[in-house]
Image 1 (tube, rainbow, N blue to C red):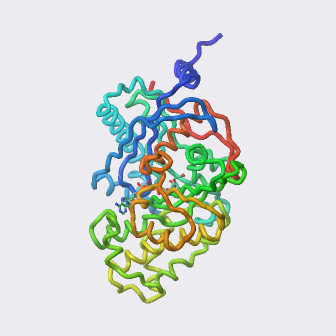
Image 2 (image 1 turned 90 degrees about the horizontal axis):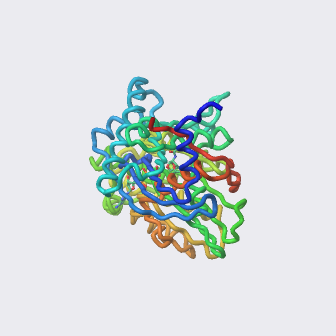
Length: 397
Ligand SMILES: Nc1ncnc2c1ncn2[C@@H]1O[C@H](COP(=O)(O)OP(=O)(O)OP(=O)(O)O)[C@@H](O)[C@H]1O
Ligand SMILES: CC(=O)N[C@H]1[C@@H]2OC[C@@H](O2)[C@@H](O)[C@@H]1O[C@H](C)C(=O)O
């Protein structure tokens, strides 16, 4: 009998371990930093038990952000730059993981796997690119082989391609973990993540997985951040100070609300490829509001996130006793949260902290969970979503 590839032998060994130590990585559309969550797992699927052992966000320096912004959500980029960044980000993320493990006094040899989201560079669902003959597509870079070789840890990466191959749009993937982290018998819940793009997972209190729904909603922080960068030389509107100093331009807000994306069938996804400052400039041009004060613009964009999200929840989930648990950086934006509270009377709006989940760590935990599923799970049928195990394996040697 030919000898078994040592990598596969190790893979089988890890997959069969009763308890696994895994690292989940998330680097989102906000480009603020790399989220690193170290978790321990027992079991798989709905029966998984896990503990978040350590969490950190390592902020990106401006020079790195500037590099990534050259290719991020752009229709035309330098192919050379894209190629270089694929290697660079893999290596860079591996270095940040090693740094975090050192800070935590944990030997990389004790970690069973890394689950890496990579950096989304372009997201192109068919309803958005509309090119005949082409399907849904998405691209995350920061290749897993570089992470595996540099850290010496088995790496699972590039989760979104399989979702598309099996009929999805490559996102949101949060629902696979949200079901596990957030479901409660007898309580109708929404886990609302306000990142660059806002998305949610509806978890019915009857526990019926076929009723679970997860979708992107529209812009979260992406437009607010873009306006703060362009006009205030700030990465974001900390504690909504700028928005609170401005006044909403209702005419512009109404114009921003008119896009076919908001009427697309669910589930649907989007990104900064659509919701960017050109989108805003077009609406300003159409409403002759190009000269409004920049603080009024930030207030209007913050109200836009609030109105899109509130309208979506009101029209899709007119459900008695609905509870929302917010996460993502936007959960710390008081303008957005206050807006939702006013626009959704009777709906309780809390934070995932109440579920024992650090709202900043949630997405990194979700990818660690997906890595655990890739190793020892079985495809789960949840709502209309592809029932597949996602991720590709990269070996250290
Ligand atoms: N104190 C705060 N006040 C206002 N906004 C905040 C605050 N803290 C964070 N944010 C917002 O949250 C953003 C980061 O959010 P997060 O890390 O959830 O995004 P992401 O993971 O990149 O997004 P996505 O989920 O779309 O990939 C910041 O860019 C900022 O807009
Ligand atoms: C293509 C891509 O990276 N999409 C992200 C983005 O950030 C939020 C929203 O848009 C969501 O669809 C997704 O991330 C989360 C983690 C998800 O897949 O659930």
